[in-house]
Length: 263
Image (cartoon, rainbow, N blue to C red; front, side, top):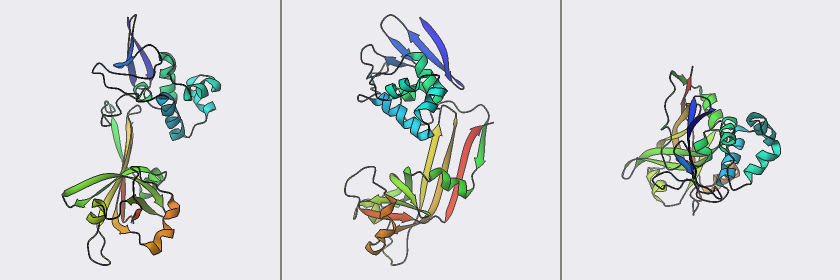
């Protein structure tokens, strides 16, 4: 039996059900615990127990919603929403679709599908609008911190690397390894002369077919010991872990941004 169910705006779920399996948009839901989901090429999407609950929590906190608000959006009880966040298995197909709508994401994302694929593979909006963002709005968007990208001319040519960052006292702060490749590439060797680099943060919402991108350009300042007190309270931690105790601060000289959305 093959059926279709519209689970969230502008997207139709392809649901394929027979006597021994169910597939949603090509993602197979095996019987049993529901902990692992694979495609026909055996790619594993949910890599550990509780992944579904963690994805629910991530999207709820991303939107700043309470359990009660998610329950109201999904037409569920608050207790059931709390139960799903701590449970190993996802709910049935209809509940999955309602949760995806409530959390402004897709069923495939809640199931962990496609995390090893580049974002933006979904269809573009039928009539997209590109909006120029003011600097204040750009700073508001990146203020929560997270993972951004630094771009500079490295020893092997143009280089772009992801870093965990915080916006602190009007500057971008991140950490790297002392004496490491990034540390060396961002030094001019001249006292008082700093390298100007780019820093970019973006977000894509494929369910809503919209997103934004912010670009900041400015000098990369290696924070010396006598200035550490100015940045250590930013609480920035390196995403990759390890010995990354060198703080680098980017002073924004130019801030630009774009937002794309439907009409």
